[in-house]
Image (cartoon, rainbow over all chains, first blue to last red):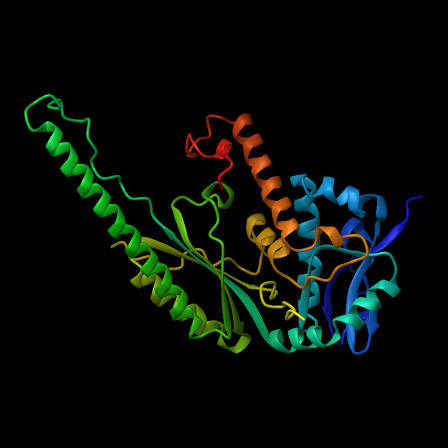
Length: 257
Length: 79
């Protein structure tokens, strides 16, 4: 039988194994809490031959495996977030035994407490701005007069105009993204700009100019949605996509020691 | 006319995989576990990109007709 290890999903407080009774994590293993110095780590057993270093290197390249584990991890994090303030751990954090889990809770105790204080009573919202694809400016080729006198100069002029137009469009798009970000930052506790996603990965049509995460007080959620709606109305030519509430993945970070 | 509402306010439901990976690999509390030490930090993001690009390539090969994907790009690995 394969060696077992402890997979860490999240750190919380005020949660016991009994609170998670009947809930399972990856591979349907029961969830357990490892308490230590006022912090509670939510863990379950995994097979070490799936999660040791060599296996992880291989498995992280396998999108089906990655999706299964990411979804499983997220399910647990969400369940924990229903029970208490939650600092989600990065995917595939594995310790060999509970002693290792407690050692991490010790080592990062103050940072984890600060992270839980920061996210308590708050949730993460995702906001994206996607510029609709414009019809490209009429480019050369549809007229058959390219051999007529002056055609070369006209071509260059048209090219220059197109370049200028494109620069203006890009500036306007960046301004729209900034306006949405800064407008929402005012009703949020914190905001972060993540790297805009490639259309091939997001499946969205158009160019993503903003991929932001905001930490929002639960009681301000409606206000946040209202402001998002207003800003979406003002961002002509672009779509504003709002999703949430999510566990505070982007905000439960530890300060660099 | 072209004003848009946030017309995709998703319920507390499933997160798109790409959003999840943005967060699970690029954010979250990073504790070095016993077996993931050399996978912490930037390395994981590289792994993610590699995995996603590999899979996108595979999809595009499998379904070349499904193309709003640009003709250039994917193979050049400049993303």
